[in-house]
Image 1 (cartoon, one colour):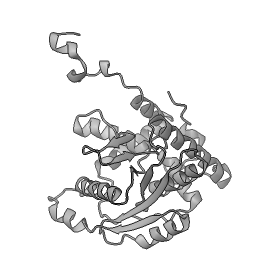
Image 2 (image 1 turned 90 degrees about the horizontal axis):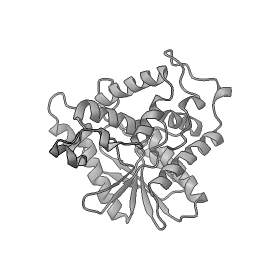
Image 3 (image 1 turned 60 degrees about the horizontal axis):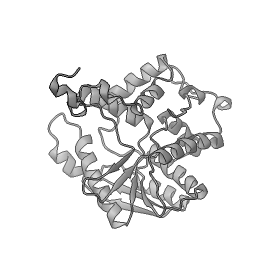
Image 4 (image 1 turned 120 degrees about the vertical axis):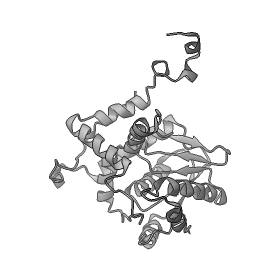
Length: 283
């Protein structure tokens, strides 16, 4: 099992009152970058995410996670003996108020080659929604199709997304509670047609580390503009709140859940596809 840094080792938001730790107790940017770099390197190494000659399309939405992902990959590229290219890509989906100029200004400062792309599919999403539905699922499918096509267009061999440890854990619980599946996210996903490979280098990085890093780095965080994003009644937000409550009462619980995703015992589940003897009455 990997040696995960306990959540409690870095400063976190205060108790229910929302107070933050004092500046003196917060980690330095250098120390936090080292921690994040180690976790990113671990995930990349364990799942062979990056190969010599890769051209990686880093999807930058304007959120803390994708900014951090690009930042850490730039740092890794400077140190790694494996040579690879980076291309940052932002996709404007057409939601009102999405400030792409702030994102472009930040990308310009990174020195990384980048593209700002407009795909106005927000009106399509809204038109197809049934009353009471949220746009997340349809929007996600359309965005994935756009990203896949862009990666091919720009000659990219990998697509890097900013999903972090909490995303993996929350998806596991969401599928368990609401979809009847034991599934999270793959660290590496190859599309059915073989054209694209998606990688998630932040798989071992807790979200709270990224919150701290975004503050220290002063990333110009931009909301996606979708009116449903982050609403408290969404199932993901409910699960996020539940896990935060459990983590507060039992620190380290999320790390145990991440470890469970790396320690699967198929023989102790009820999936008959993995139990040939079950059809014959095996117990």
